[in-house]
Image (cartoon, rainbow, N blue to C red; front, side, top):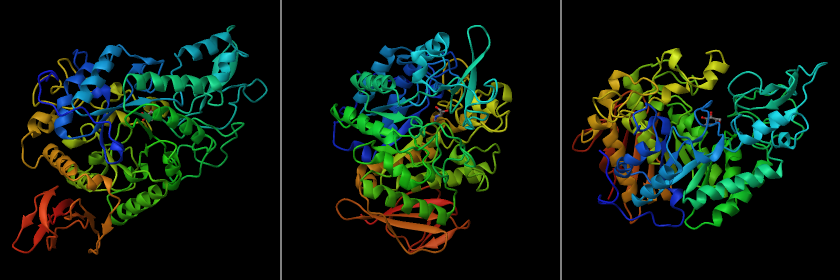
Amino acid sequence: MTESPDTAEVPAPPARTADWWREAVIYQVYPRSFADANGDGMGDLPGIRSRLPYLRDLGVDAVWLSPFYSSPQADAGYDVADYRVVDPMFGTLDDAVGLIADAHHYGLRIIVDLVPNHCSDQHEWFQRALSEGPGSRLRERFHFRDGKGEHGEVPPNDWESIFGGPAWTRTKNSDGTPGQWYLHLFAPEQPDFNWDHAAVRDEFATILRFWLDLDVDGFRIDVAHGMVKAAGLPDLGSLEQTKLLGNNATPSFDQDGVHEIYRSWHTILEEYDGQRIGVAEAWAPTLARTANYVRADELHQAFNFAYLATSWQANDLLSVIDDTLDAMRPVGAPATWVLSNHDVTRHTTRFANPPGLGTQIRTPGDPELGLQRARAASLLMLALPGSAYVYQGEELGLPDVTDLPDEVRQDPAYFRAAGQDGYRDGCRVPIPWTTTGPSYGFGTGGSWLPQPEAWASLSVEAQTGQAGSTLEMYRSALAVRSAHPALGAADNLRWCDSAQDVLVFERALDGGPVFTCTVNLTGAPITLTPPGRLLLASASVSLGPDHVVLPSDATAWWTTG
Ligand code: NOJ
């Protein structure tokens, strides 16, 4: 299964071409759940390295790796204890260097995750801040405060943790008496850095350079909208902190001061050859606010969470596509499109359920309908101008695992919210590679979260070479994108007149032919005059002499060329 880069037929390493990221398809690898080389049930870097040929053959341009750094794993690695060390559960720094080199050899770029809003409570600075006690200079690098109330027993303000409960935890003094409080917008094991402190800024500039020197092509920046807090940490009052999209800016998120950090990072990225990029994970309230993160002298891309949160409804999709393009155009940044990631219910399961349930859903809904819609949604996404993100396993049409036993769950939000929320483990179940074997080829041991038996038939092995499989549909779609770079690159989407709940848009391709994308959201089959030759469809299309029937919840691609 493993293909050595020394012997394989491989494309030339990625040219350090201008603006490669504007139309890139970027594949998210969640290291815990991609491939396990040492059989301990947990994915690792050597496992990812052995599967790079799969990613090359899939046709993606770049790979984003979720965190693999030294971490006690209180939040699956988003609690970093040492930003320059690979956690032994994932391998070694040599493995990371080898993975980056192999990826480049296969023509793939590597984006690593950077977690600058908070660290682990085991980080050396935080441990020293705790042990040195109130007045320690190290405490200034975090947000330590005395409590309110007669005995300091009330948290310093009313902020809530995104994972549930207060955003403050009280420390103990060395004599065991209750001490100061510290801020954590996420779990208590994730203390927030104080970005007003020069040492924090300097440290992250050094961390960026450390990974750039190891030749990474960019960074996905975790909680990119959180690092700067409103001066004085004022109360939230009536604002709802945990509802980010569509909210007003809160004192803890999307503060204007954060942009100065990105301007300084832009300068660092520019010091290196080959278009190294920064991608903002910024849950900003509006697309216009999201665009601020990708102004010409800041980051390069921002995840389009407004798109991710849009339900499978024609009007909503049309609006969010237009709003996105309109918001990005003035700042000259590419639009991005994303349907799934490691924090939300996979779109196969979201679309299997009625709209309006949000991005964390606990019910399987109608899985067949969900898959049909997910495939249609993926072809719609891949026909849009800009860059697209694919979350590992979506190319297999994996659903969320909605019936994980509570005792295997690890999402800290599940425990903080007493089981009321925090169902992210369902999208993190290790992916199936083969139809048999103890973990369907994920590794030789088990898997840290149990995989459903039905996943044998969704495995890479089962779908490879199967006409019409979801995997082959993705491969074909990415091949079309790479044959026609204008599909991703050109900002030339034009909506065509269409029946209600049918989305039709055209894109002029390089050299003259016109590409058309048709999406049927009517809930019933529709009959159309074909706008060209059928390139690809998410479901079987019946072709007549001068008409075609497109099933419901299906997308078709056409070309006049
Ligand atoms: C966003 C990450 O994607 C998520 O997994 C994590 O829990 C939070 N940020 C906190 O780091």
